[in-house]
Length: 139
Ligand SMILES: [Zn+2]
Ligand SMILES: [Zn+2]
Image (cartoon, rainbow, N blue to C red; front, side, top):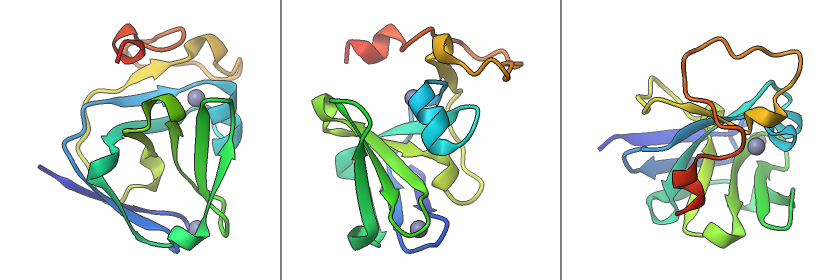
């Protein structure tokens, strides 16, 4: 099992994950694009019980980007730490960009490709989903 470490840009907020990662996605929805300031946002799914903050819990702010979805970020530097769905509260979706080191992850797939930025072309062979994969929805 690999232990993953991550932190926000200003390093106030740091965390670790002690779990093998099985779900890795690039989300092209407009909310992820806007909040991450990028063409898409990359996330891994972790069990809440295998995620631990090591510092900066007092610097964490949340934003409800929809009625089900809360986005977690550092109040000082604005780095996106994760989002979670209130209906799947046992899972966290961690921003892969906040992780450190040479990490090995499963093959990613693209989600919410139906909302993709017109100025960005997906030029890899990874699976694409218009919204979310069925396996995710049925969980
Ligand atoms: Zn920060
Ligand atoms: Zn998204």
